[in-house]
Length: 310
Image 1 (cartoon, rainbow, N blue to C red):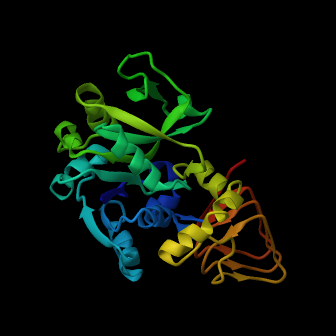
Image 2 (cartoon, rainbow, N blue to C red):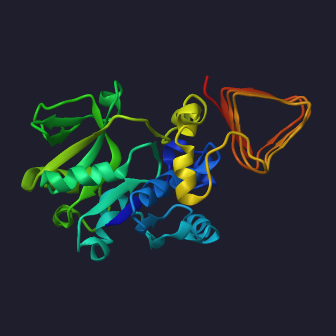
Image 3 (cartoon, rainbow, N blue to C red):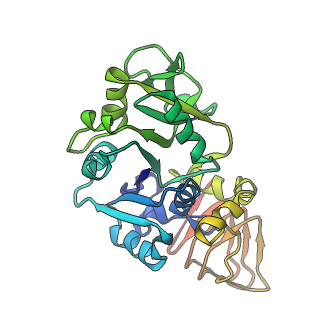
């Protein structure tokens, strides 16, 4: 089975962090978020991957190259004009139209065993199976309408009246039939491919009941690194076995003064924490300098700036 990773977005909600770093390389516990996705794919025995890129494309290419593609066969689909989730997938139809394939986002942190999703899909007979996650925030994020073990709607856009406390969790197994309903230009896969499968084929679901978090906003990025750090560290061994590196709180390549205080925080590589600095419940992204006597709390610090979560 092949996989397609969405990694082309601008990361607009994460600006100004993504002005200089593409969202797939924004670190969670000092590991670029896309590494969590790659580890899940390798664990499921998938090493043939197509990854679309656009924003800071060269940075992502270089990251893969510097890590020898983590032992995977990775094909880069670079979009000179961004095509959205629908158009980006449609562009790679010729690479994916021979068998069912796995679709996954590069900005989700999840402890799912993808083999369970794949097995569920294969036994269902559906043209597609989406991984869902139950959350009380479903109506705010965008809920999925389910009925009789199938998906019938998203945000009630099809006016079916079917609602739920589940969201699309950013992973799916799909039949090549989805390409019949995708557009060549810019489009959203929910509005085209997923709704096309609902209307003309069948779209099922698989509930993920473990840990799940996206990093799409500064608050979510902070929450993932700080509030959820212990949950993520519990599956660090799984990640390390697949890609050779594990999530960690303090980078060994950071320089932290013995006269600084770092409490319940994450500090990235090549950071300099100077004398008298106090860092509490904060994320210090790579190459950031925290000057003498600076105090930061509940913040994300990055080269040239800081975002407060209060």
